[in-house]
Image 1: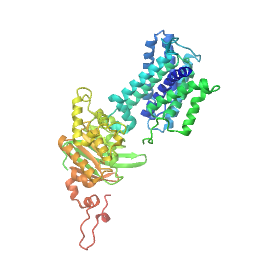
Image 2: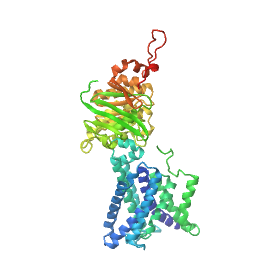
Image 3: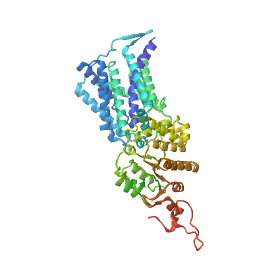
Image 4: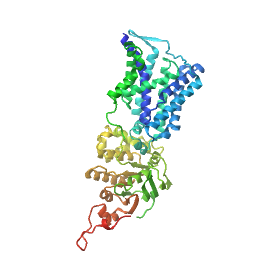
Length: 289
Length: 268
Protein backbone atom coordinates (compact mmCIF):
# COMPACT_ATOMS: atom_id res chain seq x y z
CA UNK A 1 0.00 0.00 0.00
CA UNK A 2 2.67 2.40 1.03
CA UNK A 3 4.62 1.36 -2.04
CA UNK A 4 1.76 2.31 -4.34
CA UNK A 5 1.31 5.61 -2.56
CA UNK A 6 4.98 6.42 -2.87
CA UNK A 7 4.95 5.40 -6.52
CA UNK A 8 2.14 7.80 -7.37
CA UNK A 9 3.78 10.67 -5.52
CA UNK A 10 7.07 9.86 -7.20
CA UNK A 11 5.51 9.75 -10.64
CA UNK A 12 3.79 13.10 -10.18
CA UNK A 13 6.97 14.86 -9.06
CA UNK A 14 8.88 12.97 -11.73
CA UNK A 15 6.40 14.20 -14.34
CA UNK A 16 7.45 17.76 -13.49
CA UNK A 17 11.13 16.84 -13.84
CA UNK A 18 10.28 15.19 -17.16
CA UNK A 19 8.53 18.34 -18.38
CA UNK A 20 11.50 20.51 -17.45
CA UNK A 21 13.96 18.03 -18.98
CA UNK A 22 11.87 17.92 -22.16
CA UNK A 23 12.09 21.70 -22.50
CA UNK A 24 15.87 21.54 -22.03
CA UNK A 25 16.12 18.81 -24.67
CA UNK A 26 14.06 20.78 -27.18
CA UNK A 27 16.23 23.88 -27.03
CA UNK A 28 19.40 21.83 -26.89
CA UNK A 29 18.51 19.93 -30.04
CA UNK A 30 17.40 23.01 -31.92
CA UNK A 31 20.12 25.49 -30.97
CA UNK A 32 22.80 23.35 -29.29
CA UNK A 33 22.54 25.49 -26.18
CA UNK A 34 21.94 23.88 -22.80
CA UNK A 35 19.69 26.49 -21.25
CA UNK A 36 20.77 27.01 -17.66
CA UNK A 37 18.15 29.75 -17.33
CA UNK A 38 15.36 27.22 -17.84
CA UNK A 39 14.80 26.75 -14.08
CA UNK A 40 14.63 30.49 -13.54
CA UNK A 41 12.12 30.87 -16.36
CA UNK A 42 10.03 28.28 -14.50
CA UNK A 43 10.42 30.25 -11.28
CA UNK A 44 9.52 33.50 -13.01
CA UNK A 45 6.38 31.85 -14.39
CA UNK A 46 5.32 30.77 -10.91
CA UNK A 47 5.63 34.37 -9.70
CA UNK A 48 3.72 35.69 -12.70
CA UNK A 49 0.99 33.11 -12.03
CA UNK A 50 0.90 34.16 -8.39
CA UNK A 51 0.66 37.80 -9.42
CA UNK A 52 -2.27 37.11 -11.71
CA UNK A 53 -4.16 34.83 -9.30
CA UNK A 54 -3.51 36.50 -5.95
CA UNK A 55 -2.57 40.00 -7.03
CA UNK A 56 -5.13 40.58 -9.76
CA UNK A 57 -7.70 37.98 -8.61
CA UNK A 58 -7.78 36.20 -11.94
CA UNK A 59 -9.36 32.73 -11.95
CA UNK A 60 -6.82 29.89 -12.22
CA UNK A 61 -8.09 28.77 -15.61
CA UNK A 62 -7.48 32.22 -17.03
CA UNK A 63 -4.17 32.80 -15.27
CA UNK A 64 -2.71 29.48 -16.44
CA UNK A 65 -2.95 30.10 -20.21
CA UNK A 66 -2.03 33.74 -19.72
CA UNK A 67 1.15 32.78 -17.88
CA UNK A 68 2.04 30.18 -20.49
CA UNK A 69 1.53 32.70 -23.29
CA UNK A 70 3.44 35.50 -21.53
CA UNK A 71 6.43 33.35 -20.66
CA UNK A 72 6.38 31.66 -24.08
CA UNK A 73 6.51 35.03 -25.83
CA UNK A 74 9.27 36.21 -23.50
CA UNK A 75 11.34 33.09 -24.26
CA UNK A 76 10.74 33.61 -28.00
CA UNK A 77 12.02 37.14 -27.63
CA UNK A 78 15.00 35.94 -25.61
CA UNK A 79 16.15 33.71 -28.46
CA UNK A 80 15.49 36.35 -31.06
CA UNK A 81 17.10 39.20 -29.22
CA UNK A 82 19.91 37.54 -27.30
CA UNK A 83 20.65 33.88 -28.00
CA UNK A 84 20.72 34.34 -31.77
CA UNK A 85 23.77 36.55 -31.44
CA UNK A 86 25.95 33.71 -30.20
CA UNK A 87 24.94 31.22 -32.89
CA UNK A 88 28.04 29.50 -34.17
CA UNK A 89 30.09 30.31 -31.06
CA UNK A 90 31.65 27.52 -28.96
CA UNK A 91 29.27 25.75 -26.59
CA UNK A 92 30.59 27.35 -23.43
CA UNK A 93 29.43 30.72 -24.76
CA UNK A 94 25.85 29.46 -24.54
CA UNK A 95 26.49 28.04 -21.08
CA UNK A 96 27.93 31.30 -19.76
CA UNK A 97 25.24 33.40 -21.40
CA UNK A 98 22.34 31.36 -20.04
CA UNK A 99 23.90 31.23 -16.55
CA UNK A 100 24.14 35.02 -16.73
CA UNK A 101 20.53 35.28 -17.83
CA UNK A 102 19.53 32.96 -14.99
CA UNK A 103 21.10 35.27 -12.42
CA UNK A 104 19.46 38.29 -14.04
CA UNK A 105 16.01 36.69 -13.89
CA UNK A 106 16.61 35.60 -10.30
CA UNK A 107 17.71 39.09 -9.34
CA UNK A 108 14.82 40.75 -11.12
CA UNK A 109 12.27 38.48 -9.41
CA UNK A 110 13.71 39.00 -5.96
CA UNK A 111 13.79 42.77 -6.52
CA UNK A 112 10.31 42.90 -8.02
CA UNK A 113 8.47 40.50 -5.74
CA UNK A 114 10.63 40.39 -2.63
CA UNK A 115 12.34 37.34 -1.19
CA UNK A 116 9.49 35.84 0.86
CA UNK A 117 7.65 32.73 -0.38
CA UNK A 118 3.96 32.74 -1.14
CA UNK A 119 1.29 30.43 -2.48
CA UNK A 120 -1.76 30.41 -4.70
CA UNK A 121 -4.78 28.14 -4.77
CA UNK A 122 -5.62 25.86 -7.68
CA UNK A 123 -8.98 24.16 -8.32
CA UNK A 124 -7.29 20.92 -7.24
CA UNK A 125 -5.75 22.10 -3.98
CA UNK A 126 -7.01 20.33 -0.87
CA UNK A 127 -9.04 17.66 -2.67
CA UNK A 128 -8.22 13.98 -2.69
CA UNK A 129 -9.37 11.01 -4.73
CA UNK A 130 -9.57 7.40 -3.57
CA UNK A 131 -8.08 5.06 -6.15
CA UNK A 132 -8.90 1.67 -4.61
CA UNK A 133 -6.95 1.60 -1.38
CA UNK A 134 -4.73 4.56 -2.23
CA UNK A 135 -5.54 8.15 -1.43
CA UNK A 136 -4.16 10.56 -4.00
CA UNK A 137 -4.12 14.32 -3.94
CA UNK A 138 -6.03 15.71 -6.91
CA UNK A 139 -3.12 18.01 -7.58
CA UNK A 140 -0.89 15.00 -8.23
CA UNK A 141 -3.46 13.51 -10.61
CA UNK A 142 -3.74 16.86 -12.42
CA UNK A 143 0.04 17.03 -12.78
CA UNK A 144 0.26 13.52 -14.22
CA UNK A 145 -2.68 14.17 -16.56
CA UNK A 146 -1.34 17.52 -17.75
CA UNK A 147 2.14 16.17 -18.42
CA UNK A 148 0.74 13.17 -20.29
CA UNK A 149 -1.46 15.39 -22.45
CA UNK A 150 1.29 17.91 -23.20
CA UNK A 151 3.83 15.21 -24.03
CA UNK A 152 1.39 13.49 -26.38
CA UNK A 153 0.52 16.79 -28.06
CA UNK A 154 4.21 17.60 -28.46
CA UNK A 155 4.90 14.19 -29.95
CA UNK A 156 2.12 14.61 -32.51
CA UNK A 157 3.32 18.12 -33.33
CA UNK A 158 6.92 17.04 -33.88
CA UNK A 159 6.20 13.93 -35.93
CA UNK A 160 2.96 14.63 -37.78
CA UNK A 161 2.92 18.30 -38.70
CA UNK A 162 4.96 19.98 -41.43
CA UNK A 163 6.32 22.53 -39.00
CA UNK A 164 7.23 19.90 -36.41
CA UNK A 165 9.08 17.75 -38.93
CA UNK A 166 10.91 20.89 -40.07
CA UNK A 167 12.05 21.44 -36.47
CA UNK A 168 13.44 17.90 -36.46
CA UNK A 169 15.08 18.47 -39.84
CA UNK A 170 16.77 21.67 -38.67
CA UNK A 171 18.13 19.89 -35.61
CA UNK A 172 19.53 17.05 -37.72
CA UNK A 173 21.26 19.18 -40.34
CA UNK A 174 20.97 22.91 -39.94
CA UNK A 175 22.72 23.79 -43.20
CA UNK A 176 20.55 21.43 -45.24
CA UNK A 177 17.48 22.94 -43.58
CA UNK A 178 18.59 26.43 -44.59
CA UNK A 179 19.23 25.23 -48.15
CA UNK A 180 15.75 23.68 -48.27
CA UNK A 181 14.28 27.11 -47.67
CA UNK A 182 13.22 26.41 -44.07
CA UNK A 183 13.23 29.57 -41.96
CA UNK A 184 15.63 28.08 -39.44
CA UNK A 185 16.12 31.24 -37.37
CA UNK A 186 12.41 31.68 -36.87
CA UNK A 187 12.02 27.99 -36.01
CA UNK A 188 14.72 28.28 -33.35
CA UNK A 189 12.89 31.19 -31.74
CA UNK A 190 9.69 29.16 -31.90
CA UNK A 191 11.35 26.21 -30.14
CA UNK A 192 12.59 28.51 -27.38
CA UNK A 193 9.10 29.94 -27.01
CA UNK A 194 7.67 26.44 -26.83
CA UNK A 195 10.22 25.39 -24.21
CA UNK A 196 9.44 28.55 -22.25
CA UNK A 197 5.75 27.67 -22.24
CA UNK A 198 6.61 24.15 -21.05
CA UNK A 199 8.69 25.62 -18.22
CA UNK A 200 5.79 27.91 -17.33
CA UNK A 201 3.42 24.95 -17.18
CA UNK A 202 5.87 23.08 -14.96
CA UNK A 203 6.13 26.14 -12.70
CA UNK A 204 2.35 26.49 -12.43
CA UNK A 205 2.04 22.79 -11.55
CA UNK A 206 5.00 22.57 -9.19
CA UNK A 207 4.52 25.72 -7.11
CA UNK A 208 1.20 24.62 -5.56
CA UNK A 209 3.09 21.58 -4.14
CA UNK A 210 6.13 23.46 -2.97
CA UNK A 211 5.68 27.22 -2.67
CA UNK A 212 6.12 30.13 -5.02
CA UNK A 213 9.73 30.79 -4.13
CA UNK A 214 13.01 31.86 -5.67
CA UNK A 215 14.45 28.43 -4.94
CA UNK A 216 12.08 26.86 -7.48
CA UNK A 217 14.91 27.10 -10.01
CA UNK A 218 16.63 24.20 -8.21
CA UNK A 219 14.34 21.89 -10.16
CA UNK A 220 16.71 22.52 -13.08
CA UNK A 221 19.44 20.55 -11.30
CA UNK A 222 17.11 17.60 -10.72
CA UNK A 223 16.13 17.75 -14.37
CA UNK A 224 19.76 17.72 -15.43
CA UNK A 225 20.13 14.50 -13.45
CA UNK A 226 17.04 13.21 -15.25
CA UNK A 227 18.52 14.19 -18.64
CA UNK A 228 21.77 12.37 -17.94
CA UNK A 229 20.00 9.29 -16.61
CA UNK A 230 17.60 9.14 -19.57
CA UNK A 231 20.26 9.87 -22.15
CA UNK A 232 21.29 13.38 -23.11
CA UNK A 233 19.55 14.72 -26.18
CA UNK A 234 16.81 12.11 -26.30
CA UNK A 235 13.23 13.30 -25.77
CA UNK A 236 11.89 9.89 -24.64
CA UNK A 237 14.98 9.66 -22.44
CA UNK A 238 14.10 12.98 -20.79
CA UNK A 239 10.66 11.65 -19.88
CA UNK A 240 11.88 8.27 -18.63
CA UNK A 241 14.74 9.89 -16.71
CA UNK A 242 12.42 12.45 -15.11
CA UNK A 243 9.96 9.81 -13.95
CA UNK A 244 12.76 7.62 -12.59
CA UNK A 245 14.36 10.47 -10.63
CA UNK A 246 10.94 11.31 -9.16
CA UNK A 247 10.41 7.68 -8.12
CA UNK A 248 13.92 7.31 -6.69
CA UNK A 249 13.46 10.46 -4.61
CA UNK A 250 10.06 9.39 -3.39
CA UNK A 251 11.29 5.99 -2.20
CA UNK A 252 14.56 7.34 -0.84
CA UNK A 253 12.53 9.68 1.37
CA UNK A 254 11.06 6.71 3.23
CA UNK A 255 13.51 3.83 2.88
CA UNK A 256 16.82 5.68 2.96
CA UNK A 257 18.27 7.26 6.07
CA UNK A 258 18.41 10.94 6.88
CA UNK A 259 18.32 13.57 4.22
CA UNK A 260 19.42 11.28 1.39
CA UNK A 261 16.22 12.24 -0.46
CA UNK A 262 17.57 15.71 -1.15
CA UNK A 263 20.81 14.54 -2.69
CA UNK A 264 19.84 11.22 -4.24
CA UNK A 265 19.26 12.85 -7.65
CA UNK A 266 22.84 14.10 -7.70
CA UNK A 267 24.16 10.73 -6.55
CA UNK A 268 22.34 9.18 -9.50
CA UNK A 269 23.81 11.89 -11.76
CA UNK A 270 27.36 11.09 -10.69
CA UNK A 271 26.92 7.32 -10.81
CA UNK A 272 25.40 7.43 -14.29
CA UNK A 273 28.12 9.74 -15.59
CA UNK A 274 30.82 7.42 -14.27
CA UNK A 275 29.30 4.04 -15.05
CA UNK A 276 27.11 4.60 -18.09
CA UNK A 277 27.51 8.06 -19.56
CA UNK A 278 25.29 7.37 -22.52
CA UNK A 279 22.25 7.01 -20.27
CA UNK A 280 19.26 4.75 -20.75
CA UNK A 281 18.02 5.91 -24.15
CA UNK A 282 21.00 7.95 -25.32
CA UNK A 283 21.93 7.91 -28.96
CA UNK A 284 24.24 5.03 -29.74
CA UNK A 285 26.04 6.82 -32.54
CA UNK A 286 28.40 9.70 -31.96
CA UNK A 287 27.39 13.29 -32.26
CA UNK A 288 26.77 14.64 -35.71
CA UNK A 289 29.32 17.08 -37.01
CA UNK B 1 29.73 31.52 -75.89
CA UNK B 2 26.68 33.52 -76.77
CA UNK B 3 24.61 34.41 -73.78
CA UNK B 4 21.10 35.59 -74.41
CA UNK B 5 19.44 36.15 -71.05
CA UNK B 6 21.63 35.33 -68.09
CA UNK B 7 19.59 33.82 -65.25
CA UNK B 8 22.55 34.05 -62.94
CA UNK B 9 25.48 36.32 -63.32
CA UNK B 10 28.45 36.32 -61.00
CA UNK B 11 30.82 39.25 -61.31
CA UNK B 12 34.25 39.60 -59.73
CA UNK B 13 33.35 37.62 -56.65
CA UNK B 14 36.03 37.16 -54.04
CA UNK B 15 35.53 34.93 -51.00
CA UNK B 16 37.81 34.48 -48.01
CA UNK B 17 37.95 31.88 -45.28
CA UNK B 18 39.54 33.92 -42.55
CA UNK B 19 42.97 34.78 -43.94
CA UNK B 20 42.68 32.42 -46.92
CA UNK B 21 41.38 33.70 -50.22
CA UNK B 22 39.43 30.80 -51.70
CA UNK B 23 38.10 32.46 -54.84
CA UNK B 24 39.81 35.46 -56.31
CA UNK B 25 37.59 37.45 -58.57
CA UNK B 26 35.41 34.93 -60.37
CA UNK B 27 32.91 35.94 -63.04
CA UNK B 28 30.53 33.63 -64.81
CA UNK B 29 27.13 33.65 -66.44
CA UNK B 30 24.48 30.98 -66.55
CA UNK B 31 21.92 31.33 -69.30
CA UNK B 32 18.38 30.08 -68.75
CA UNK B 33 17.76 26.50 -69.79
CA UNK B 34 21.42 25.48 -69.99
CA UNK B 35 23.48 22.95 -68.09
CA UNK B 36 26.67 24.68 -67.06
CA UNK B 37 29.61 22.77 -65.59
CA UNK B 38 32.44 24.19 -63.53
CA UNK B 39 35.46 21.91 -63.59
CA UNK B 40 38.58 21.95 -61.54
CA UNK B 41 40.87 19.99 -59.28
CA UNK B 42 40.70 19.76 -55.50
CA UNK B 43 40.99 23.12 -53.85
CA UNK B 44 40.20 25.09 -56.99
CA UNK B 45 37.34 26.84 -55.21
CA UNK B 46 34.43 25.16 -56.93
CA UNK B 47 32.48 24.36 -53.77
CA UNK B 48 33.23 27.80 -52.35
CA UNK B 49 31.82 29.31 -55.51
CA UNK B 50 28.53 27.41 -55.18
CA UNK B 51 28.32 28.11 -51.44
CA UNK B 52 28.87 31.79 -52.11
CA UNK B 53 26.11 31.84 -54.72
CA UNK B 54 23.72 30.00 -52.40
CA UNK B 55 24.40 32.36 -49.49
CA UNK B 56 26.16 29.85 -47.23
CA UNK B 57 29.26 32.07 -47.24
CA UNK B 58 29.17 35.80 -47.83
CA UNK B 59 31.49 37.11 -50.53
CA UNK B 60 34.06 39.71 -49.58
CA UNK B 61 33.65 41.51 -52.86
CA UNK B 62 31.65 41.27 -56.04
CA UNK B 63 28.08 40.98 -57.22
CA UNK B 64 25.87 37.94 -57.64
CA UNK B 65 22.81 38.74 -59.69
CA UNK B 66 19.87 36.38 -60.02
CA UNK B 67 17.21 37.49 -62.49
CA UNK B 68 18.89 40.87 -62.58
CA UNK B 69 18.69 41.49 -58.83
CA UNK B 70 21.65 41.23 -56.45
CA UNK B 71 21.37 38.36 -53.95
CA UNK B 72 24.74 38.37 -52.19
CA UNK B 73 24.77 38.53 -48.36
CA UNK B 74 21.22 37.23 -48.00
CA UNK B 75 20.40 34.26 -45.77
CA UNK B 76 20.60 30.91 -47.55
CA UNK B 77 16.95 30.09 -46.80
CA UNK B 78 15.83 33.37 -48.37
CA UNK B 79 17.88 32.62 -51.49
CA UNK B 80 16.38 29.12 -51.66
CA UNK B 81 12.93 30.66 -51.60
CA UNK B 82 13.87 32.78 -54.63
CA UNK B 83 14.09 29.59 -56.67
CA UNK B 84 17.80 28.91 -56.48
CA UNK B 85 18.43 25.59 -54.77
CA UNK B 86 21.79 24.09 -53.87
CA UNK B 87 22.34 20.36 -53.48
CA UNK B 88 25.33 20.58 -51.15
CA UNK B 89 28.53 18.59 -51.29
CA UNK B 90 28.13 15.28 -49.50
CA UNK B 91 24.33 15.26 -50.04
CA UNK B 92 23.34 16.16 -46.45
CA UNK B 93 19.99 14.40 -46.31
CA UNK B 94 18.16 14.50 -42.96
CA UNK B 95 19.33 11.13 -41.60
CA UNK B 96 16.54 10.46 -39.10
CA UNK B 97 13.66 11.54 -41.31
CA UNK B 98 12.10 9.16 -43.81
CA UNK B 99 12.67 9.54 -47.53
CA UNK B 100 9.15 10.91 -47.94
CA UNK B 101 9.67 13.43 -45.12
CA UNK B 102 12.98 14.51 -46.64
CA UNK B 103 11.19 15.22 -49.91
CA UNK B 104 8.47 17.13 -48.07
CA UNK B 105 11.09 19.40 -46.50
CA UNK B 106 12.02 20.56 -50.00
CA UNK B 107 8.62 22.20 -50.40
CA UNK B 108 9.49 24.93 -47.89
CA UNK B 109 11.35 26.73 -50.66
CA UNK B 110 8.39 26.80 -53.05
CA UNK B 111 7.56 30.31 -54.06
CA UNK B 112 5.10 32.21 -51.85
CA UNK B 113 1.50 31.19 -52.16
CA UNK B 114 2.23 27.97 -53.99
CA UNK B 115 2.95 25.95 -50.87
CA UNK B 116 0.39 27.64 -48.71
CA UNK B 117 -2.94 26.66 -50.18
CA UNK B 118 -4.28 24.59 -52.98
CA UNK B 119 -0.87 23.22 -53.91
CA UNK B 120 -1.39 19.79 -52.39
CA UNK B 121 -1.97 18.30 -55.83
CA UNK B 122 1.05 20.07 -57.23
CA UNK B 123 3.25 18.71 -54.45
CA UNK B 124 1.88 15.19 -54.86
CA UNK B 125 2.41 15.35 -58.63
CA UNK B 126 5.98 16.58 -58.18
CA UNK B 127 6.68 13.80 -55.72
CA UNK B 128 5.41 11.22 -58.19
CA UNK B 129 7.54 12.74 -60.94
CA UNK B 130 10.61 12.50 -58.72
CA UNK B 131 9.74 8.88 -57.90
CA UNK B 132 9.52 8.38 -61.67
CA UNK B 133 13.07 9.66 -62.14
CA UNK B 134 14.36 7.75 -59.11
CA UNK B 135 12.22 4.62 -58.70
CA UNK B 136 14.46 3.41 -55.86
CA UNK B 137 13.34 6.34 -53.70
CA UNK B 138 9.75 5.20 -53.99
CA UNK B 139 10.65 1.70 -52.81
CA UNK B 140 12.32 3.23 -49.77
CA UNK B 141 9.86 6.03 -49.08
CA UNK B 142 9.29 4.93 -45.46
CA UNK B 143 12.94 4.27 -44.63
CA UNK B 144 15.19 6.62 -42.70
CA UNK B 145 17.36 8.53 -45.16
CA UNK B 146 20.48 7.76 -43.12
CA UNK B 147 20.11 4.08 -44.06
CA UNK B 148 20.25 4.71 -47.82
CA UNK B 149 23.33 4.00 -49.89
CA UNK B 150 25.45 6.89 -51.11
CA UNK B 151 23.88 6.86 -54.56
CA UNK B 152 20.38 6.76 -53.15
CA UNK B 153 21.21 9.65 -50.83
CA UNK B 154 22.41 11.65 -53.83
CA UNK B 155 19.15 10.88 -55.62
CA UNK B 156 17.22 11.93 -52.53
CA UNK B 157 19.19 15.16 -52.22
CA UNK B 158 18.45 16.00 -55.86
CA UNK B 159 14.82 14.99 -55.38
CA UNK B 160 14.50 17.15 -52.28
CA UNK B 161 15.88 20.11 -54.21
CA UNK B 162 13.48 19.42 -57.08
CA UNK B 163 10.52 19.56 -54.65
CA UNK B 164 11.31 23.26 -54.33
CA UNK B 165 10.57 23.66 -58.06
CA UNK B 166 13.73 25.70 -58.48
CA UNK B 167 14.50 27.72 -61.59
CA UNK B 168 18.18 27.19 -61.04
CA UNK B 169 19.57 24.00 -59.55
CA UNK B 170 23.11 24.06 -58.16
CA UNK B 171 24.75 20.64 -57.88
CA UNK B 172 27.95 20.27 -55.89
CA UNK B 173 29.87 17.20 -57.08
CA UNK B 174 26.94 14.89 -57.73
CA UNK B 175 29.39 12.06 -58.52
CA UNK B 176 31.25 12.29 -55.20
CA UNK B 177 31.93 8.79 -53.92
CA UNK B 178 29.77 7.07 -56.52
CA UNK B 179 30.67 4.21 -58.83
CA UNK B 180 31.12 5.03 -62.53
CA UNK B 181 27.82 3.30 -63.25
CA UNK B 182 25.92 5.38 -60.69
CA UNK B 183 27.69 8.52 -61.85
CA UNK B 184 26.45 7.88 -65.36
CA UNK B 185 22.94 7.25 -64.05
CA UNK B 186 22.90 10.47 -62.02
CA UNK B 187 24.20 12.49 -64.97
CA UNK B 188 21.73 11.02 -67.41
CA UNK B 189 18.90 11.94 -65.04
CA UNK B 190 20.28 15.45 -64.65
CA UNK B 191 20.23 15.75 -68.44
CA UNK B 192 16.71 14.37 -68.50
CA UNK B 193 15.51 16.83 -65.86
CA UNK B 194 16.96 19.66 -67.93
CA UNK B 195 15.37 18.38 -71.15
CA UNK B 196 11.96 17.65 -69.63
CA UNK B 197 11.54 20.72 -67.46
CA UNK B 198 13.89 23.23 -69.04
CA UNK B 199 15.43 23.75 -65.62
CA UNK B 200 18.75 25.57 -65.58
CA UNK B 201 21.53 23.63 -63.88
CA UNK B 202 24.91 24.80 -62.64
CA UNK B 203 27.08 21.93 -61.53
CA UNK B 204 30.54 21.57 -60.16
CA UNK B 205 32.51 18.41 -60.89
CA UNK B 206 35.85 16.73 -60.64
CA UNK B 207 34.73 14.04 -63.03
CA UNK B 208 35.48 16.14 -66.08
CA UNK B 209 34.55 13.58 -68.69
CA UNK B 210 31.05 13.00 -67.33
CA UNK B 211 30.48 16.71 -66.84
CA UNK B 212 31.74 17.76 -70.29
CA UNK B 213 29.72 15.08 -71.99
CA UNK B 214 26.46 16.09 -70.33
CA UNK B 215 26.69 19.85 -69.91
CA UNK B 216 26.28 22.56 -72.55
CA UNK B 217 28.71 25.17 -71.32
CA UNK B 218 31.82 24.75 -69.23
CA UNK B 219 34.12 26.79 -67.06
CA UNK B 220 37.47 25.62 -65.79
CA UNK B 221 38.69 26.83 -62.40
CA UNK B 222 42.16 26.73 -61.00
CA UNK B 223 43.32 28.12 -57.68
CA UNK B 224 40.31 30.34 -57.25
CA UNK B 225 40.18 31.73 -60.78
CA UNK B 226 38.28 30.94 -63.95
CA UNK B 227 40.90 30.05 -66.54
CA UNK B 228 38.78 28.89 -69.45
CA UNK B 229 35.19 29.30 -70.56
CA UNK B 230 33.54 27.87 -73.63
CA UNK B 231 30.91 25.41 -74.76
CA UNK B 232 31.66 21.90 -73.58
CA UNK B 233 32.11 20.68 -77.15
CA UNK B 234 34.78 23.31 -77.75
CA UNK B 235 36.48 22.68 -74.41
CA UNK B 236 36.79 19.00 -75.20
CA UNK B 237 38.75 19.81 -78.34
CA UNK B 238 41.38 21.80 -76.52
CA UNK B 239 44.63 19.91 -76.13
CA UNK B 240 45.33 21.12 -72.63
CA UNK B 241 41.86 20.20 -71.43
CA UNK B 242 42.19 16.82 -73.06
CA UNK B 243 45.44 16.18 -71.28
CA UNK B 244 44.77 17.68 -67.85
CA UNK B 245 41.15 16.76 -67.39
CA UNK B 246 40.36 13.90 -69.72
CA UNK B 247 43.64 12.03 -69.37
CA UNK B 248 44.16 11.71 -73.11
CA UNK B 249 47.88 12.14 -73.68
CA UNK B 250 48.93 14.23 -76.63
CA UNK B 251 50.46 12.33 -79.54
CA UNK B 252 54.21 11.96 -79.79
CA UNK B 253 56.08 14.92 -81.17
CA UNK B 254 58.30 14.96 -84.24
CA UNK B 255 61.38 14.07 -82.24
CA UNK B 256 59.74 10.93 -80.96
CA UNK B 257 59.39 12.15 -77.38
CA UNK B 258 55.96 12.50 -75.92
CA UNK B 259 55.00 16.12 -75.89
CA UNK B 260 53.39 16.95 -72.62
CA UNK B 261 51.55 20.21 -72.19
CA UNK B 262 51.98 20.03 -68.49
CA UNK B 263 55.67 20.84 -68.67
CA UNK B 264 55.33 23.84 -70.84
CA UNK B 265 52.08 25.43 -69.91
CA UNK B 266 50.44 26.56 -66.76
CA UNK B 267 47.19 28.41 -66.38
CA UNK B 268 48.69 31.19 -64.39
